[in-house]
Length: 314
Image 1 (tube, rainbow, N blue to C red):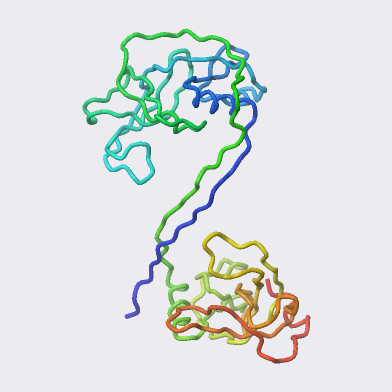
Image 2: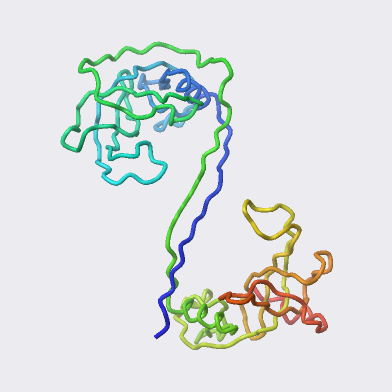
């Protein structure tokens, strides 16, 4: 019985964006312990502020300062905080309508337990000790004053040294489990064989197999061994090194139509200068000791394939 395959995968990158005048004022204000909202034409105050009225799509720039106190409108208890969340101990996620605002702001609420949280409770902002112009300048909310203040005042949105861009580290962690078709493909690769599956309708061989034909949408079960040689159908030269990548630039990444396959797969080309890689180049896979999949492809020494033999390979 073949083993069930799983693999932990992480997709992570820094996402940097520039800020318009409204978001710049809001985040710079947080750095200065000032909460800004924006007033719509019909008098509503939106916090956090947006640049366009969500109802009319009208551009809005009328900034106002609201209070650092507010009321919980709804909440959910987080008993097992994940890394990098606002608090390391259990807390509540709460929507808080700050005094003077007509919309609610989502943030952490530090409380002794779920029994200490209720809709309608009064809270106040706990500011972070170190503030740099981000939503994390609000460390969290905490139980606060019982009185309600609806006062707002106009604000120019002008601060010294305004924040004009932010960088957010995006990160997604998940466990990938291949289906039957891809599991068979991966088990075969560990034995240095490449398996595809043939569509019972159009008879095309898909590599790697997906369990169904991408053209006809029909389930595929007939296994077909392809390769190991193949043809480069198109390629690109990579000149920018990815963070933590072990491969030195420049290198070539290519689509490769393996012999007997009707769907090209992708792989790295090595063993040849980048400027000598070309469409029609005949290549073969190279495995490293213990690897479950080819490390790269390199030229076979055969004559280039004629264009008509691979022009229809997607």
